[in-house]
View 1 (cartoon, rainbow, N blue to C red):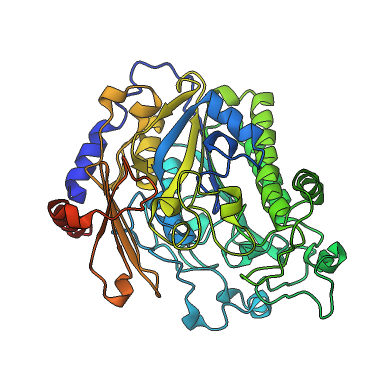
View 2 (cartoon, rainbow, N blue to C red):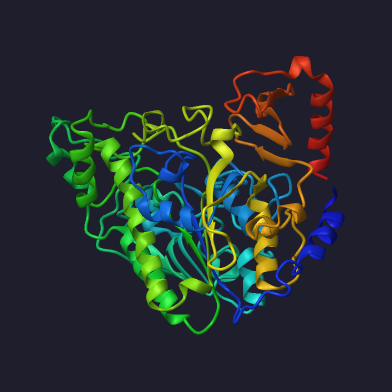
Length: 496
């Protein structure tokens, strides 16, 4: 389907499923996006070791989407698809473009002095983002957490892309430590009481005992960024009680480096027992208790979600609020996170080559939960196939406005239990032109086609039947050349 026809089809859907429903005001919308959270990292998606009672309660009170996909297997391009509704064959940003031509972008001391070295490739001026769309619908808009879609001073900063308020990390490289020397409040750098630390070049001190917790003391500083981000988020809710608001909580958790509040780390050390330290061999900061700390990061954030829900209920906002919870991509493989130990991939493989950075299910299928009292039936589950590009038309329909051109289809009928009225994608398409590898993938019903190593000239498609091979272990391309040929043609159409 070309973009023009898709736009006509999606626009026809806008507003149709909310007619006849009584809403005193437009609902508040909170979109919670975790970073590198695997499909199986939370209790309601099968996690056995990490406790997530507040997220699990959201699942019980709403709908669980079991076939929801990110727009890309890494941060910036996934966020671009979410923000613009354009899949990665049409989107402006398709990989983590750090713009190294600017100079020493990976030198944390230099970035501290030279603002122009931080941040990523920017969205174009006046891009129709999900934030701008919600502003046009009359919403107050705020983004709190990690941005990664435009360096300071560019046209891609949150304030120039549809958000009234922003607080957090502009640059996703700076988010590799949770004790940064600065964060951003709108366009202004806010300096913190933390020293500059390079999370990629800060080994244990020479002769330090890796089994002694004191050897890791230097990695904990005064101001933990996630505490500050949460405080600003709560202020945004308080300030906008009398107007509908759209809040994006794009937390960097649980992306490594492994750093969490001590009380939560202690909790999991008691639960898991002693363990081998992570000394930094796979990148990022060393950590004395890597399993305990990874779990602590997720449970800490779960606790914050509980705090936000409590705030909404106290202010009588919860009953008129749609909450969306998901992740930007699949489980990671570095920094001491040890996804296989946690079974972070859940149903899918999560070791290197199968999770983050790759277009296998473990890299792009993400947990998704949505609650909306009085509209979404509690305790429901759907296998509707949808992705980040579908969020924009879905929220447009909920807000009662026309949809801008996107590659998406509203899944509001699914949320409201109107399965028979839900339109389906003919296919979903992804491309991730990683400078070293390169991947393309397509999903059509039960069929999943993947082409890996595109940067090395590979054009051969692997084919998987997800109905009976959800872990993508048996390539059946040789048995179904007709399906392969059709998917190859759809891949070409997807980028027109």
